[in-house]
Image 1: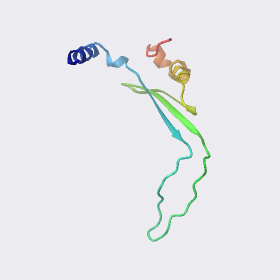
Image 2: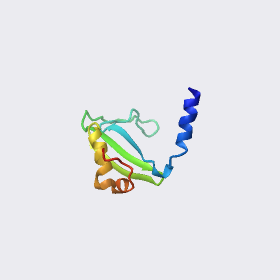
Image 3: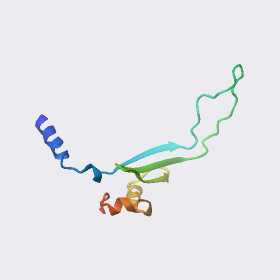
Image 4: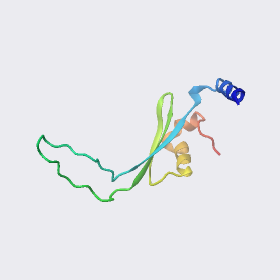
Length: 104
């Protein structure tokens, strides 16, 4: 097992890190609220929390050594077709031009 690990590590030495692009996704609820509020000393913080207004949004971004290459938001959950759209849309022409996304 240790020899396989060393072989894998040696294979990584052949990869040009300038050609790597990392795609990451994060999801959030637009109706999220803070658990605590601030108030002037001696006064009570009073406020209301909206119900489940808002929805779920997914944020997808592509990063390389130069920084953020492409980003997009998707209403609801992310699907593989959305990732493919990120790779091939006008938002990310630089990713495709450099050959970072496969056409498969």
